Image (cartoon, rainbow, N blue to C red; front, side, top):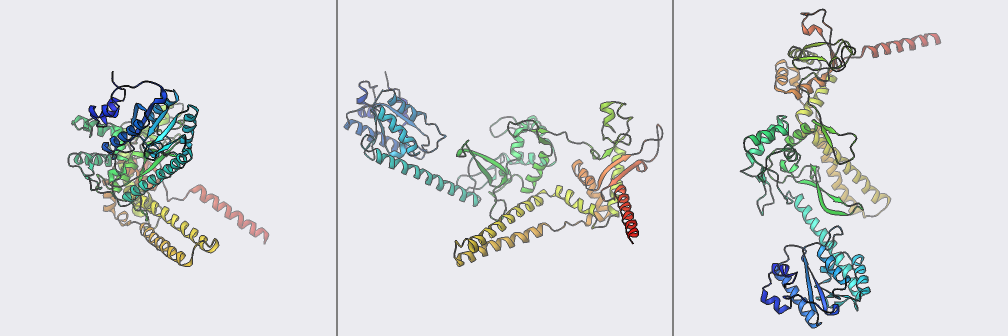
Amino acid sequence: MEREDLPALRALGFKDDELKELGLWEPVTGDPTSLAEMYLRRSKKKDTLAALRAMVRQMCAQAERDRIKIRHVWFEQKSASKAYVRREEFEKSTAAIAAGLSKTLYVFKTSRLSRRGMGQVGLLLDTFEERQARIFVVAEHLDSRTSRMILAFLSEQARDQAKDIAEFTKLGIDAHKAEGRWPGGVTPYGLECPKGTGKLRHLASEYPTARRIAECLLAAMVPAKIADMLNKEGKRTRKGAMWRAQTIIHLAKSVSWAGLIPNRERATDENGNPIDKYFRSIEPLMDAKGVPISGGEGVVTYDEFLKINALISGRSRAASGSSIGNKRRGVRQPVTIMTGLFKCPHCGGPLGNGGRNYNCRNRAVMGEAACTGAATTRPRVDDAMAQLWTGHILQLAPDSETIQNIARRWLSYQDPGKEARKRQVSAVLESAVGREMKLQKEFFVLQKMSEEQFESLREQVAAQIAELKAELAQLSKEADLSPLMDPEALTAIWNSEGMEGRRALLKAAVKSVTITPAKHKGDRTPILDRLVVTWRDEKDPAALAAIDKAMDLVERTRQTAA
């Protein structure tokens, strides 16, 4: 019959002969006052097995001096400072004391027992006192029966040390991240972080496939179709599994895929205390100027990353009526450029995609009682709208509202990185202005700092504000709209865009389009003559009539008063 803790002792590197010499070879029984539990904790893997074996030898030597035999050695590798970490072996060792199996618990140091202070150690001492048991700390020669106050002080000291260790660790991690060093963990598909470099670089075996995925996403291909294509070609993930749509989405939403340092947010428990769980934000870590911090090479650029995520977000919406998680539902993507703009002449409802035609959706869904219906072929309407749009844009002045609208909508669609950078700079500028106001309050109102310190800090904040204002002014400059004034360039812009791009161009200039009813079956009236376009820069006739009526009323009132 062998001891229950023999596998753990052998895992620590003890030979059978040494275990026999230490009295840890055969199971022991007897009076609980002559038996003891031994608790051994390894906080990190860097604690060598040789050091752990030395601790066991010293505790066994103390037990021999006390003429006590070790009933069981409890070993685990867990943190002693985190309240949310359950230490099963520690609980078993104290449970054995509470059950009356032994009367002594040997630990090497107070910090090995607990780093949670008297909140935990005090309750443990009360329990042991009720059982007429004790804790003996070998390295510090402390017996809980005679040195309770000292043990309480050392347990609080161990708790403070744990806070310092956590603070220094966080400081080191933050410093590495600020320098653009990879914080650790699994790198995104297509990238690697060679040991000792701290920088991301392309992984030759994965990068071609990763870049192909990125190009498919930029071409607005849905993740499910990309996964199906890769699986048919026999391509597999890093772990050898088949590709899934969700895998593609997770990859696309990782800022590390763009070679940037991720901004991790630490999760908390119900009381607001941090736990060992982190959530990686879709936003990258920014420096003091609001610029994303690069961690090396990426599969995509930051601008491509923003465009991919804008395309993915546009295909889903927040699910209503669900209180569980961050649920989203897919949105059916339009396959026509006129979706949402084309209106039925009879009921005013939408003329939507009906295969080869645009037809009244109210008639298709609710029948003839809802609308008599209207239909026309898609290609000729799309071609006609391209002509009407081009002709209308060329007639406008460069400073017209429609041209500026195109600059805001279409150019932001083309260059999402610039728009995102403008938002980031604006947020950082607002924060810097707030710090400047707080600094002035600290000096002029509260008088908490010297004039030299105030001037030094004020100059730094003022320089940052001036730099941010200059960058924001540069980003806010109007884009070059000269291509919108040239017929050939304008046509080239339209032809170069896909469905989403053409829809963005139309929406920037068009409110709605209505088709006049056909005069008879087979009416050959040119489609250009039947389309009635309401442009965004047109004045509302009803509003103009109301203004004229109001002006007439004002004039009559003035004449009556005269």
